[in-house]
Image 1 (tube, one colour):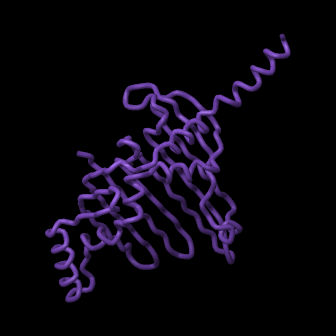
Image 2 (image 1 turned 45 degrees about the vertical axis):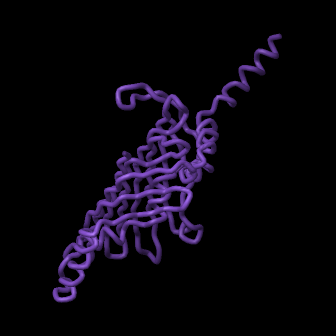
Image 3 (image 1 turned 180 degrees about the vertical axis):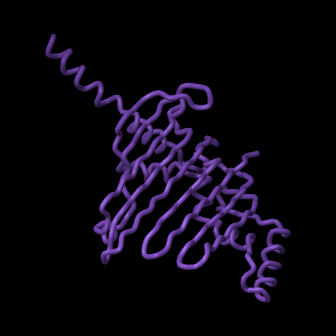
Length: 244
């Protein structure tokens, strides 16, 4: 009897894995439910080399929809007219910025589609993740489960050999229904090549809501920075989806 109790106590912790439960829950979201939303996207980038900083930025809004026929991104006529106007001015004044055109070029259809159906994308991030800690934290005034993770780096082996330091951490807030409320990932690296050092990293902050059998990203903030080889850059992209 004592041996049976001991074996049971050893197997229960292995079975109670919040990461495995989350993977199973995400795998059940097929993403076939029709969905519509308003998209608001802003973009900012600064590049610094031996000259003065160069900043490009912009902001656009659109209506997006995905159903059995596919994905549609609807740009309003004033937005397209403004983009054409900016191009016309820039052809006469090459140094003039084009904020609407800059933001339009930065909205990627594949990224929009994944924003409207992110269960598979998050599952990819978690496939090789390792659970470091499972605990309870407060999320918007209520206690929820939190998973602290070590993530697999998305860096090709050809580049990874130049890395001296590489750290990829993740964190997931899980709601009572077993689905994620939010996800963050932080990448930090440092390395050298041809006796020149470089460093950088990026962060991703996502918030989710369930729409039928979809996991929709309602807020996404992506930031990236790097420095080396005589230059540095910073980028920030923010996308907000508002559901009807």
